[in-house]
Image (cartoon, rainbow, N blue to C red; front, side):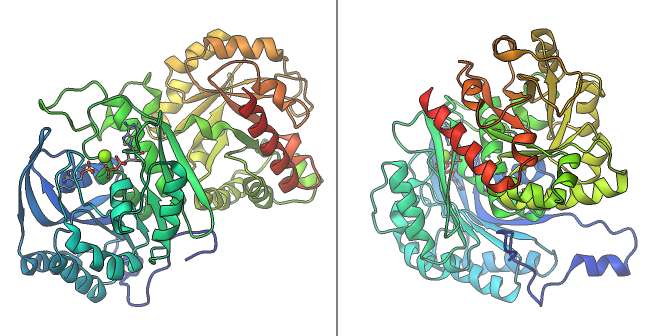
Length: 522
Ligand SMILES: Nc1ncnc2c1ncn2[C@@H]1O[C@H](COP(=O)(O)OP(=O)(O)O)[C@@H](O)[C@H]1O
Ligand SMILES: Cc1ncc(COP(=O)(O)O)c(N)n1
Ligand SMILES: [Mg+2]
């Protein structure tokens, strides 16, 4: 495990595909997940959901089936458990052949089936184990009874890298612990962590009376609350399976745990939002569309894995300032993140391409391990080469629709806009957010027209996209920016306020605090 919370390193007896690559030419490593779960005949949850998620996230997924359910959008009519010996045959078959990066478990309906899983995992070690302790379907049908609780607690949870119980499952694993609030979810996450998994995610989809859908993540030291507005839809069948499979897929691609969890939460949220009005089946719990990302609709910007709240404290690097203070970009980015930056943009106007690429790659690693988004200013080539999360472009750079076609539907695109017309065009062309300014005069950008708080408000009102304010913003005026009364103004972007300073970490912390306080007052 790396010190930044990445997934653990390969065990010594792991057969590396990289080793294979050195002996066989033209071999390309494909990230691989194995799901061990139940079949859902309605195909909204279980094995079928897992296969769809992995396909949508570009990961190969093999499937070992533990049980077959007769299930539709009205509920579960019948469950047929497969004999443990046959589950074991399936496990042996694929584990002895494929080279899985991650195993994800769903419905494990009997102690005997958990036993054969544990035996096979000890015979064929894998890099990471994601345990979704499925017990009850969204419709209320018991999929795994209380008889599995003790083997879960004593043997499966301790070897899991992450467990993803919903509130009912967390409560059952903790012997009936009451979970009614987010504070209860935090206590539950802590108690579950004591059972041995490296990370815990308690899902709050079923928490009563909340306008947000909140999941609580605990890494043994820190909590993160992952929030998204609750999508009003009947199509929530399979959300839990989807979330866990998406975490597994992102881990297989090399993400850190926090990063994987954040991407998965956005994926579920985007899929629910995209599918909120589709009608499949006549029951109360419909399936949703996992392939929303393939639908070519540039206006549905929410199809990207982007959370507008990540614009909150947007740090833009500047090589001139780093030189002045004798800092590497990597150190500057690290300090900004540790101080609370929620998104990083690398803006390197003078760097040589090769040098910039190496720095960008190092920054991608840091950002991924902290679950922070990394964007590249202008340079689509660098963004592609270092697999950044996206780019930020100005009005005189490549047009946004072209950038979208070069980067594909998953990447984040931000665009600088000074006017309502530019904001409208950005939305039409498929951008994810806009940066608006310069709000105040600044030395960072010469000859840049200042639009003031009034200009910012005008752009926000006209924009269908989330907005981050930029230009001359710092601790002294951030509050006045955040209070302009525009719900889509999600944060401030800063350059000098962080990087033209003696201590980036201290300034980032101060600014983060100021922003949090001004948000609370709104
Ligand atoms: N209506 C909703 N709107 C937005 N997110 C939701 C909604 N329902 C569930 N989620 C999210 O889906 C994921 C699965 O959660 P949950 O439904 O609690 O698990 P399960 O399906 O195992 O019961 C979580 O990230 C949760 O926050
Ligand atoms: C075979 C199977 N496995 C799991 C679930 C849980 O579904 P959800 O993800 O909605 O909690 C299910 N309904 N059926
Ligand atoms: Mg659910």
